[in-house]
Length: 308
Image (cartoon, rainbow, N blue to C red; front, side, top):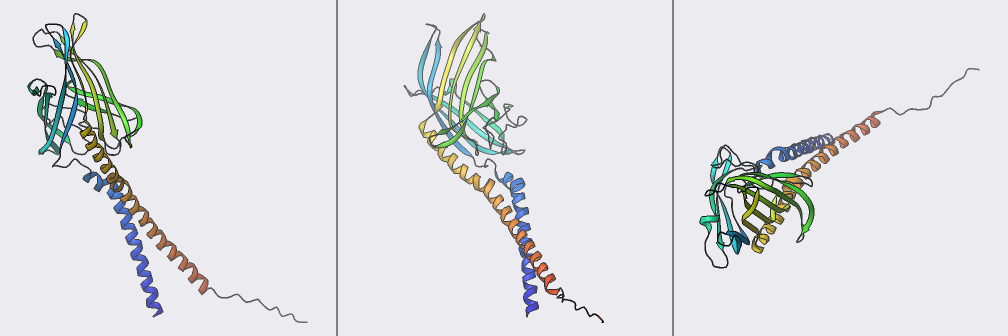
């Protein structure tokens, strides 16, 4: 019976060691293979963002700027995949919030985006407009990082540089800023004079999930008439309070889920696995030492006989 008991204990130690090794391998695979495969934009993605602000437009009669409040809606919905890219139908509508007039025919747009589901980079060879750079901030982000965000008005990616970290309504965020002046965007259709675009965009980003919880921008389009710049349109936009609240909820939820599934799950598995392997090895070593001591003959003091 004693021999059987020792044999069972030996098998148990082997099983614990194997389970520990499996947990360590699982944790490593989770971080390097499994989680990256899961951490993607879902194929049923859909979201709507609401902006509020002011448009100022040149008045040809007075050569002054006429300003009016606006509401902008950006709707995005996944419509399929192609060669690994997620296809997103995007519609931007704009209304004069003072009169209720829909002015989307002038200031709105519509298109199909092709986005890499993991990196959030545009897949230029598939995207209908050949967009480049990022659709949204990559994740995770750290202090000092930057990213190239596609700007539809500029027709190219613009670099968002790290500004600072701060607490935004109880959530730790990183603030990034795009600041570009006098980007050549072609010519004015009627006069043929050069058009220039200047823009300042700030994004408050929850770093682990890349969620933009607040966004504000000022974009100025100017004509360059014989070396003199004249603004013809200025747009000032920011997230509405409803969109901020929705993005904050998304960021908080994503932050805790990513903490668990990106960090805690694999490291708990690796840590517990190492403990099981180490405990099994230590137990075997201790038993080996005990066996060696038990089997060692007892040394007796030698008696010396002297012949006289």
